[in-house]
Image: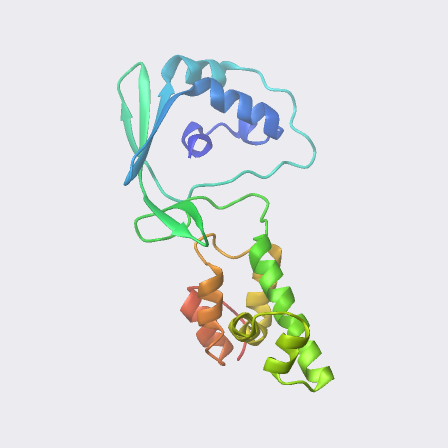
Length: 207
């Protein structure tokens, strides 16, 4: 949000540590409430930043996270306040900041898969393969491997997700707001297009 507001292309293309240093230098305070986040930026710091002569950026410009939402801007002269409406939700056991419409506040520069989702998908495919090749019933397989039968039944439907959704899940390209439970619910739709629609994903895949 700060980078987008500053509109300084030279800063945007600097290495992460340089960008972080200058962002910290202009941020005066951060106030987080249940429905908004407010950043106060020091006006003198902003002027110093724009006047600074940055080194030439690296040949390969580093990525950076982007907030797709416009904050409310208030300029009091000494401080510039950026206020963004948010909601705080607990997803997969952790608290995340989302827009009021439950969309991700930040688009990450380097997508990272969620380890618990990757592990769940891996287990589902391993169990599915073992069951098919071994010719065992789920209860028999669960007892033989000391695995809770209900856990196997819960995760196995992940093998029915479309290749596109699986690719997004394993590469970290899913929105942060999509949880493991969302993927499990989507997997109940055997139509791949319906799965993507259920998760709010655009897709070019055919069912």
